[in-house]
Image 1: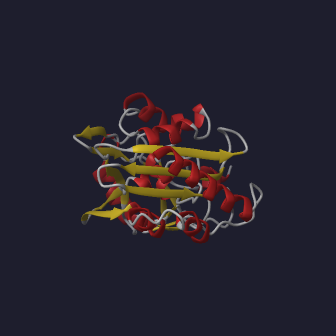
Image 2: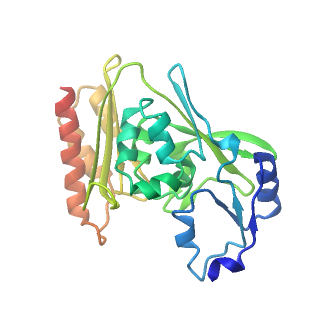
Image 3: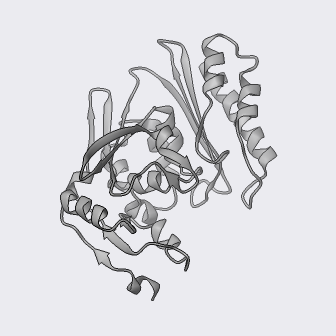
Length: 272
């Protein structure tokens, strides 16, 4: 079989994994493997080795300290639903609609982020929360905003020798949220469009994040600024202009653009 030709390493801790990543620059990290193992069937794939980081204790954090949530990159979606479902309800809704129970039992937050799909279900709530990712190599750690980390489809700012070890974000003290995933089915289907809106009543600001309508998940920063200035009339037009949907097997660009406008309108109605 194709996978029998790829060397496999199973470090027992994060230090060993980091050393292997530095030593084997053409390796790939294996956690749940729900995306990676499919991609490796491509005969043109250049992965020369697999480093198994599933279960590494340093990547299993699930904690909320005050208003700060820290989530280890190796945490599976099922475990999050069991132990962290009340931390940030928009993310919980997204995870509950993601794939199937068998996939959620294996797939990890770190894998979903590093895979850098614009249709990744967990990303709009994390973008709306201004999440950051913590990256580590043998040389140390660095923090990168999630929106800066994901560069395009299957492209991220992860450098050679680095492992994404944690995702962190601040949960507002008081907020109203609206999350929707539009797909052929409620689950077991990629999104046509996904949307997360947050309203922070104390400073009267909103955050708008859209999935599957551009090369990355998109934050409507200009539209958010219009809301803060009381300019709601042109906000929807701003969103419609900002998104960059395409025609594909799941939907048309025009329908995706229409959905972005409608979902934003529904969110504004809820907070008005």
